[in-house]
Length: 96
Image (tube, rainbow, N blue to C red; front, top):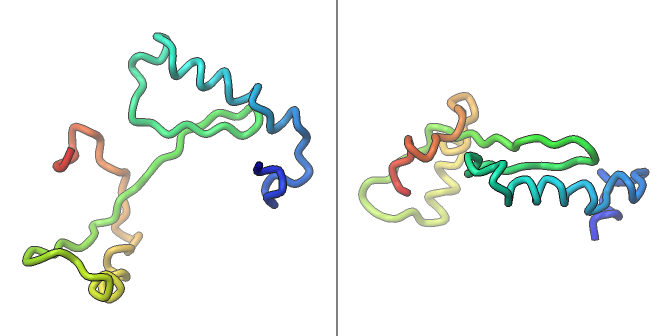
């Protein structure tokens, strides 16, 4: 399904197969990972890693919901990566 993507060109089946993902899925579904949640795990061949998210300061609109046009106008401030920081933990989030 993904073997035709440029990032996978030149990789053999033994580098891309489900046999590499299955142990990670089994681990995450087991009691061995009972204390692990809210993580996005990646597998590339035999490498296992976590994806990390970050947030910008964003823009708060207090008076009404956003329109697409307003989002376009404010997008530079919304996406300003100079203010980027790690995404808040579940305990730090306000709207869970």
